[in-house]
Length: 282
Image (cartoon, rainbow, N blue to C red; front, side, top):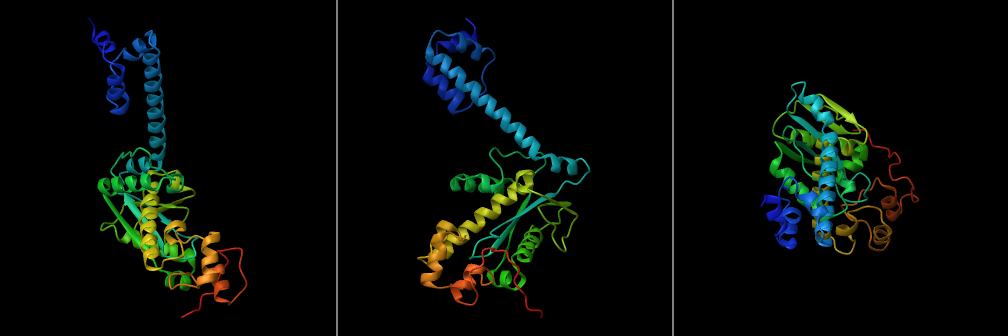
């Protein structure tokens, strides 16, 4: 009796646990045998295994594609490639947070993507934990509310990015940055439009920045209850704008943003949160 024939005598529940739940390698010929089996459950199991294999192949191709910028640099001898991204440009409250991450060569983390595409907060935290464990180096940089109001949000975001790169503890050979270039960056760099969806390293930084900022906003929610900061993370939701009007402006609110200025009674509501704000010269 062949090994495949012996496996067909195994209860389907055990085969399901072995090859779907625990994802053990499927012996050659088993899927064909299951598909030819007279039992409906056997044919269903074969279909589920093939679907999983197809998803794994598609995910592998996606991850290889995400490494194309890094691979190009690695092939030039630039081993320490840092991805850099930020989180928190649009909120009315809280800091802007950036992260930098240097991943091992040919690193692949299943499910890693632009943090905005990962809707499950628990899954983002799992990915962040894996990145912190596996990365060659990672760091977070912050620009506080006072700096946002003084510099404007765009330049504060760049400042947070620069601090993240400097916080790595080593100088990268090259930096891949989401959509912009960092002033006074300590290494050569390239800005990539939609880089968090096109580069593995930038996607890693995106997840680290997002999860770090979300935790900060949870801590601020405990300090300033009633504003819903842990839910909306400081973004201009109707709930947040209403709380601003009813409860007033907190020290963590960005006074250079239109809804906050409106709540302070200084100027009418601005529809463009990124409208230029004059910055006093020193």
